[in-house]
Image (cartoon, rainbow, N blue to C red):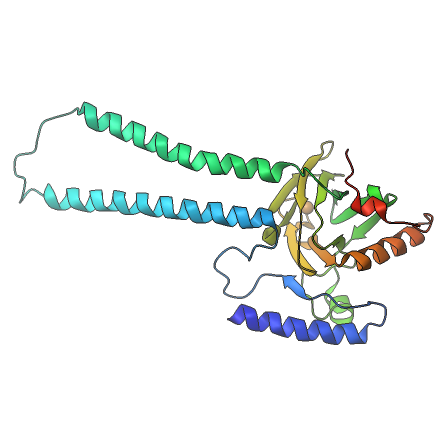
Length: 287
Ligand SMILES: [Cu+2]
């Protein structure tokens, strides 16, 4: 309820910001932000996060049943075998049937958990049909995003000071707004390749179900596919030093034509040739 209202306020604010800033064609709504009194996972913004949430729901049912069962056994044993009801305790120390049962049943429960768990792990592991790749590099203390399939320009993403945020992006949350977001087209599968320049960092956007620890000298892979246009936020999730709290992750999801326009702008300002076609953004890059 509060979340919905906040979203509404953000929507109005972003609309106002859109009118105010002449350069932005159309302001994107602020969607992927934490809300006050939020208790559960954030809403799922990617197919991966939908599956993470449903595995979580399955596990919640299983652990609840187990906890209730164990609690029942404890309370029952305390009541039934209290000295007043059971003055002479039994002296048995083994029960073969019981021991086999409490070995086999937990194994079966673990197998039931393992199957969807591994399925999800491999689902999120690699993009099978990515439209293009973005290389994410963690730095002390900012992110850079390289677009090798669009001419290999790089965008550096740094947190906005509070004064700049109020001036430039008043509808965006404090401590999460950045100067340059990672920009992707809506509904496209984007392969994320992550590495780090100095120490380890963590590229994490909770609503996307992605949390990639990025490590110097290594490439870690993941993917995102966000159907809805808007702004989504996350934070560095690997303690990386002094500025760890000040390197938020912001992703801006645009429509395909707006994304192509953005790419063209970036290519121009990077001194690359103006794009003649945008096939590279839609053709699967098999690398
Ligand atoms: Cu970091």
